[in-house]
Image (cartoon, rainbow, N blue to C red; front, side):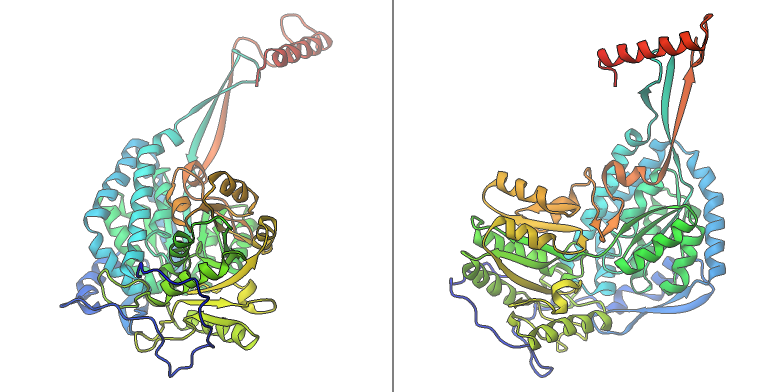
Length: 549
């Protein structure tokens, strides 16, 4: 991405690209002696990482950069899943007896190992997802922050807590937190480090075991993290991994788990929730989004344009909290779009296992077809392409240029469906009320962004947006990276939260222990029932007068 300034002229519009077009986005220069997939994913590495997978079948994964096979892998059957849960359940009993500070120390050692050996996992993330290296590093950052936070704060979150009892001084109440047992985790492909082990860390430190089903196409990253956690001191049997097709293995994970953590589509999330509900098992779900960015009339146009590039095109838009709808005030729309379009057209595409590319590949054929369908349908119905709009097979089989669409309106699919790719639609508004109404006019509610020079105004608009996180003057990173605060979705974007106290307490069962002393909670000291009722009524009035809670 360049920092050159654009003119305030609105950019010219073009139609959707044809297969013959090569597009306008430049290629990032490839470094000399760049590592290849064969250099990174060696037979020795695959054997080391997969030795803990409970699987009797065979499958494989592939790299989006070329479409070629990366590794042959074990594949799990329903019987393998049952076996994994049996082993995890036995190991969890011993792990839960380890003092919480010792469990937390594992996370702190893991933190150090991840940072020291990040080059290994950056290569794996890039090869398995196709994303640019800087975007892969976002996962390293997120996991390190989560490991540090729960490594430091878990003893406080989990310690017994005293509460006021029913009868002051006579009732002693303690809240205890017990691990749920074995957590079943179904992790997605798009952030294979952060959304696998990042979500598992608080479960482990709370005393649970985890049976994880990462996406097969990106499982080497999750298995690398498992290897590192074991090196940091986590008992191997506490962290079980199963691999296989989602419709086969996923329901088996839900069927055996004491709690389910799922990140993925809203459609599959509903199925997971139904399966968990049938067993009265708790569940946390981070699901889809159609996230909106609001550029108010007093926004810094240059900063907003640069922020929009990050918000829309990080990881090629394959980010649950990525921006897909961009609302800009009509008074600054032309100036903003000129800058935003120039920056977008300057993004460098690349496949190297090195820093330098601004955007990488889509993960596979299905994502590419969705992106192409949304763009082509929108253009056929009158939308204009301000940037991108074309696949780039000259770079890799699943590359698609970062795309800006103007003139988007219903019933175009891109208006309401989650694209999950490098495509953003532009809409103009005249008042803050109008922008908020449009931003909220979706069944989703995951993330949103507000741009303004007035902090108070930004906070006021943010409070009106029905999303689990709102970022003022940034796209998604500040809210997601603030791990002491909860992160999750409203409406069809999910249930439950990751991060903060909610992110660890969801993996526990609360138990209230109340000890009654001296006097029973019943008539005593010669009082009959009526006298006892009068005494308790007077006591309740006194407690209210003295502001007892």
